[in-house]
Image 1 (tube, one colour):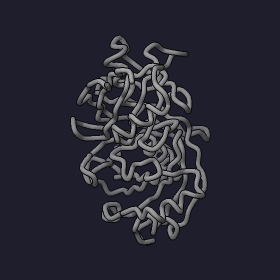
Image 2 (cartoon, rainbow, N blue to C red; image 1 turned 60 degrees about the vertical axis):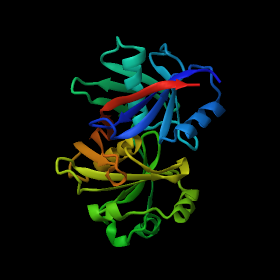
Image 3 (tube, rainbow, N blue to C red; image 1 turned 30 degrees about the vertical axis):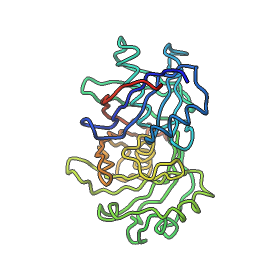
Length: 291
């Protein structure tokens, strides 16, 4: 095996040792699909990314994303964290933006002076809806824990999620996935991860609190999910959750597993189209070399 430099980055983190951990490998083309999957399993973070070329192609950098279980076409915190490494370690002359060439296409990351990087996600697509009776036993909750004013619905901005609205933070904290029921559910669903949210945050300056479960990808619970929060942003606008066609909010995640994370969500519906942006901060915490 070749020697490949790698970095560990905390993404959607306001400080080191918080947020969602990401491994970024500067592999180039000298790596096989099998080796990438092995390394992702070895790192055992929610995702590991591989920078396949350090010079742009069509204005963007070729990047692939792997969970411990499989390759995925898009994920939020790997996009922001990889752009952070490209900007700081590979192309330090870059100031305003980095474009990644992912399986779903090009995703642009824009860097602000306040340390927040923003990714513009693809327009959300909405799938089928589910009953509370179907999702409650999957999550170890009661039907009464669900908010009946809003649907349980599949949404994607690149990686489909099932979005589940809850009434209270107490219910969000109490959720425990029944793996048998979860895998039975996703046999017939387009979306595989399940994201639950409520309007009661842990920290009063935030707007919503979120948890995400994706055992199918080898991720029992994710500390911060950029793709899922992008789906949530589109969902909140579509269903006028806050009573308006535009949102600019703070979404917290990871508190239940000791990795407090903060995601900034912006979305607006104009002329029947919903635009979604997800932002956050990234911190490099380690670097090394794969032998």
